[in-house]
Amino acid sequence: MRDVAQAFVPGHVTGFFTVDLAEDPTEAGSRGAGLALSEGVTVTVRPSEDRELRLNGEAVSVAAVHNVLDALRAGGQVRAVTDLPVGAGFGVSGAMALGTALAANAVFERGLSAYELATIAHGAEVQADTGLGDVVAQRHGGVPIRLEPGSPQVNKMDAVPERSRVEYVTDGEVPTAEVIGGDTDLITQAGTQSLSDLVRDPTLSTFVETSRRFARETNLLTEWVHDVVRDVSAAGGEATMGMLGQTVVALGTGLSDAGYDPSVCQVDPTGATLLAPPTDPTLPE
Amino acid sequence: MRDVAQAFVPGHVTGFFTVDLAEDPTEAGSRGAGLALSEGVTVTVRPSEDRELRLNGEAVSVAAVHNVLDALRAGGQVRAVTDLPVGAGFGVSGAMALGTALAANAVFERGLSAYELATIAHGAEVQADTGLGDVVAQRHGGVPIRLEPGSPQVNKMDAVPERSRVEYVTDGEVPTAEVIGGDTDLITQAGTQSLSDLVRDPTLSTFVETSRRFARETNLLTEWVHDVVRDVSAAGGEATMGMLGQTVVALGTGLSDAGYDPSVCQVDPTGATLLAPPTDPTLPE
Picture (spheres, rainbow over the protein chains, first blue to last red):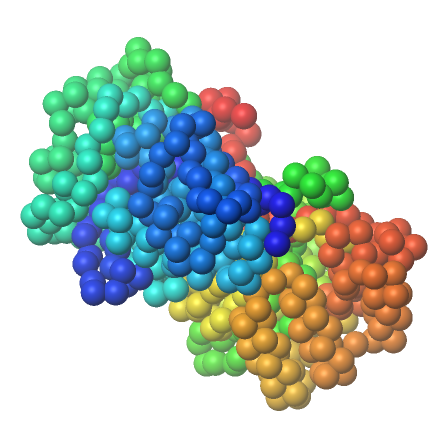
């Protein structure tokens, strides 16, 4: 057993998605596309008798994280820290689940592979009804395109080969469970169409365009998001809704140019990863 | 058309591998495992009438790169820069092919996806007889395990969820084509066994151990490599041969501890990626 392990998992904003249910939670999931963000969640796991979970210093209960710890037969103190808005469509619960899986595997020396750990985190998130595609996208990094649903051991991925500055503003939350538990035929139909169009032209511009159409066609677009996106377009920028949140994401300086005061980050090219052990002084810069 | 685009592709040392031939070069390839390295190749592509390819300032001809440019119907000036030893098992040709694909796609706005570009680079490298698994591993980053051969669009991946300092020394080259063109049954048999053992315990220690056994059983181990690996073991470290090169890689401070003066880098968690456009002043740090 090790004293401590740390993982960083990027945030993930979804542009469009489908709902692909299945009996087996590791085969359930979603197709779609999004942006992995350099803002993310840092998860630190230490061994302890009792389970303890904190997010930004406050005790929280996150079902997906508990499911992960159950699957790894791990106690442990889990500390998650993030600057991302919580419950606003940035995949914080998925990041906590995946970061916990990576760090707990290291601390308790469970000997699981990267994809096995992502499968556990994905299944945990699906079972908790808190997400369908974030964990897969967060493991991958970049601008992931989820061609086939399910865990990284069964799905099929691609990606948009671009980087960008990303700006976002947010104004509250849309509970994931309500949407993915409701009538999802319209969502899956629109998501499938957007996916097909993005695959034909895998660029960031087309990602934003197909995402915006998805938000309109699924009626998920709120009035507030609609107005902000319109302002960005009027200023010559590209923006769309971050699913599922009261959130607008823009490429480049889209929101700043439209007079907003956004948070700023960029596309994270790496995906979820263990951080260098704080105790390893041998790592070069 | 853009003025310039740049990509970074990590080096890749192979620990063990199989040779899986197929009619279609995108389905041919190899299973196995290796380390993606923070030392890699930076490729810069600019439009130009004539093709021009330079490696560290010197004009070179690299078949895999020409194949990539052919596939993308691209002219262009390609400048590759690396601190890695060339022809010593660090995947420099694969890195040049993949970096050229990413950067040329951006410059000439070909609109291909990340996996399509990796497929082109993989096929180009296979057709040039210069590698079977590097491009796939370099696209992935980390400590990639190639479970099934072929391009990223048909293969199956996993990874060892660990980071480490990596040290290496090198003493000349072993031509890839001679080995992968020769009798490969023994290689594939030993590689399959090592893969199976690593999948059972996907840790860095087991990676080194299974790689060392592969080098012995395939008779690819040279006397020089054997002696260096023995020195590292005697000093309590873990080292193995970098395939296919007169190269020894060690985890942590293995080579330093044994009295060598190695090059030092670390596992690269990211994989091949476009670099921020030098002309984009909006990117945050």
